[in-house]
Amino acid sequence: LELAEVYLPGQTLEQGVDILEIMKKFHIFTSHYNYNLNNQIFIEKATENKTINTINITHIANSIRTHGSGIMNTTVNLTYQFLVQKFKQFSEFLYDDQIKTFLYKDVRYFNENKEKMNSQYPFDRAEKFTRSIKNLGMTADGSYLEKFRLLVTQIGNAMGYVRMIRSGGILQTSNAIKFLPSITDVPKFFELLTTDVIGADGVAVNAEEGGGISNTSPDTIQAAKNLDATVEAMAHHFSEGVDYFTMFVQVFQKQFLTPLYSHLKNFYIVVPALTILFVDSIMVTKERMTKKGKQGGEGATFTDDGFAMGVAYILRLLDLDRDFDSLHWFETEKLKFENDQKEHANLKNEIKTAQLTMKKIDLTHKEFELLRFSLSGARVFFQE
Image (cartoon, rainbow, N blue to C red; front, top):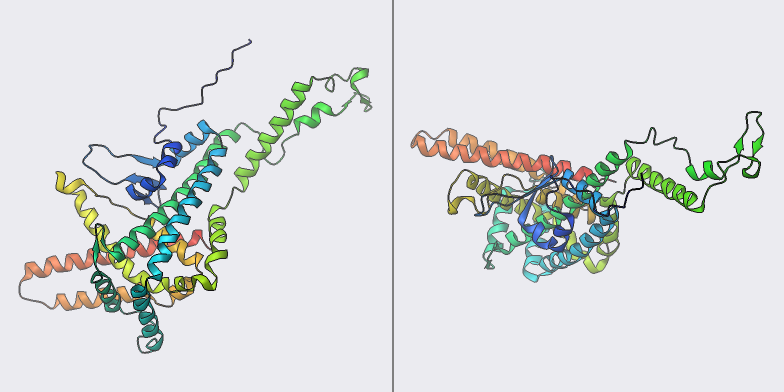
C-alpha cells in the first residue's frame, strides 16, 4: 500500500508538561517545583488550585519522542545559561563584605579550636550565624541567608532536571531499541547493499552478473546509511549516554578554581547554617500539607531534594568535599539531639509541654537524618 506521509508527531495521553513549556519558563520552573531524588519526579508547590502538576521520566521520554533527541542538547545549553546567572548571584553573596567577615571568622574559629571541639563544628555556632545574618535585614523570602538557601535549591533543581532529561533519553532509547535483536552485533545495512553477493559455489557474484542486491537505487542506499546511523546512535546512547554532571562540573570548575574566585572557598562553612534553615522550612511546609483552606495549602510540599542536590554539586564544583566532611556536622547534630532528649526527659513538671517539645525534637532530628541521606545520595552522582 502506498500511504500518504503523516507528519503528526507521536503523542500519548500521558504527555504531561512538555519540555518546551519548561524551557520557556525555566527560572519559574526551578522555583515553583520541588525535586524528589529517589523517585526522580518534580512536584509543583501547592497553590490555591485544586490540582498540581507533576513531571516524571515518562513525561520527559514522551517529549523527547515528540521533538526528537536534539531537544536534550538544547535543554542542556539552556541549563548552562541558567546556571551562569545563578552562580553570579551566588558569588555576589559570598563576596559581600559583611558575609565574608562572618565566614572568615567562623573558619578561623573552627581551625583554632578543632582539637578542643573533637573536630565537630558546634551547633550553637551555626545558629548564631543564622541570627547574625538575620540582623543584617530581611527580604520578602526571609533573611539574606534564606534567600541564599533558595538559590542553592534552584541550582540543585536544575541539576535534578538534567538528571531527569538523561534518564528520559535513556528510557526513550530503550523503548526504540527493543525492536533490535542485539545491540552489540547489528549488521551494517549499507555494507549488505553494496557488497557483492557470494554465490552458492562460494564465488562473489556482482550486480552485472545477476547478484541483484548490489543493483539498488541511490535512495535505497541512502536509506540504508540513515538506518545504520540511527541504530548506531541508539546503541551508543543506550550503552553509555552522556555524563552531564561531569560536564557541568568541569565547565564551571575551570573558572571557579582560580584566585579571582577564592572567596567561594568558604562556602563549606555556611552549609551547617543552611541545613538548619532547610530543616525549619521543610517542617513548616510538611505541616501545611495537613491543613485545609487558604492558610494551609499554599506553599505546602513533602519533598525538596533540590537543596541536597545543590549542596552536593557546589561542594564538588569548588572541590570542598573534604573541607565539609572535616566539620562532622551531622555527628554534631546527632549529639545535640541526644543531649536535648536527656534534658527534656528529666522534666517532671508540665508533662504536656514536655511531650510537645520532645515530639518537635524527634521530628527535627528525623528531618536532619533524611537530609543526610539525600545529601549522601546526591554526592554519589558527582564523584569522580
